[in-house]
Image (tube, rainbow, N blue to C red; front, side, top):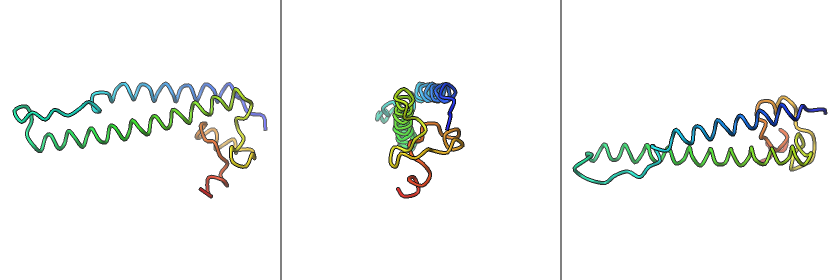
Length: 112
């Protein structure tokens, strides 16, 4: 299989850049919720805490995605990109194109 590694590298870097931009935009939502009774009512505080919890969960997901992207970029540099990290078989190009950070073939992904 002859993959266009430059294309996948660019795609991965673009995905990483988008994640960093999303992270920057969501900083306010992850900020601590003030507990002052004067400034916010009880229900508003509960809503704010729920928004904060969702923002923190999204942040953890973005961090996980960034780690997968960094691992895929390392595999490109090491000449291992496009091969399943579990069984060593080639990963379908269509699968890589849809999710370039994917590390396993469809068969190994099904077994997890």
